[in-house]
Image (tube, rainbow over all chains, first blue to last red; front, side):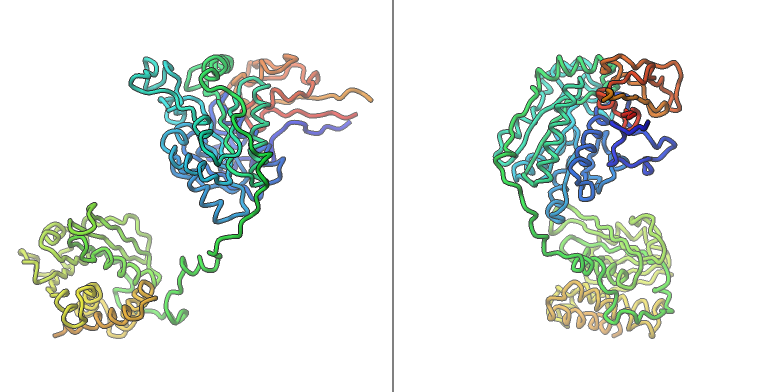
Length: 490
Length: 75
């Protein structure tokens, strides 16, 4: 006599749920009687049946199902609220032989992510979406959702949803049906076993369409949420049967999967792995491998820099250049901009932290080592953050210095003037300032003469990275760097 | 050929006692137990587990992945 499992835990689920924190590793985190668990089982069964587990990408929503990646042993991306179809589109295009499933709730899909969802449906992306409609926001404690029924009591509609002020329930499946592209649209419910079997058929169909790359498939699932609606298992089934189903009629709304031919796997986009690696991990220096130990203090300590001026001066770019210089020497860096909504004018500042250790916060509000200020307002605003023995580089044509501690190194320079006179354009002011900085660091004893070349090489590498396609710009920036050094030495 | 036999098994500590399976069972084999499990729920128990007909109703009603398992017994 032998036994074999007829119905049991799907192999698409992890066993146990190692990723789930806490001592309970066999159960999902959902409340008792939750529809998510039922739908998870159907989806897992369909993935297993169609044999696509190895190439499935699961778009995990925000909402109760936010931890679906604890449970499904498939590829998964946890996506910002409502953006699952948008991210799914990206995944489906970047990895064309993957199978993208998006699993979303009603707050996620029908409220904040409705546009992403409708646009993806309209483009006919070859993804399958499971939409869990439980008529409220479950995760946050049962607030009103777009799909809440008229008169239904929720945490935010204690007297029932008033259609005069709160509008009517959104019929997502019917709205999708107005579009041309979708291939398969069905609404099912998770109440009686017969209804669940219909839901299973719909889920299998959606996964089959996904496997055959037919096109956009959408299954709306009326799911029980007994805990938030304060009902027992029987009561919630009655609620769905007698109140939700009349509002959201069940059935197949569209099925063109027989007419549509199976899709083919489009060629992978031109960005092969090597080119992506090249962009993400550029060689650190031109003669990589020849990184030598630098003895200067500037190469071995944390440096906190703040730059401030008005928008359009290139303050933020200056910060990026400095950050890139440090990044190319394998420092940890952070770059934190702060600017107004306008592209030109307004106050702009950025904070750059360079460190051999971890950077806990990218903000600088005190203990700043170096302040570069190009306007009077910027100087007045940020001078308090500079250390008493810090370095101040300011535009001496625009700024009048207040009374400052004697230990502070104050360097006034007409960087715009130098750039215009010596290089021919005020555009190169940032490189002039970095040239000035290298001299100031030398004078302060932070940068040895021996390491001066490495500083300049880091600058050249950073500029080359930015302007690699314009050899003229690289040259002019190098010229500006030299002009900055000379301008201050004079 | 002998009729197929089945057995339903409920993992005591995995059940959350929501009661969805109770009504679903056509043979009414399941009942609310009287002991709290590790999670603090009154777990469902199968009283006459061998009388199961293997329809799978309780399995599909159950929101937990592995709380209910139905075995097919071959002689």
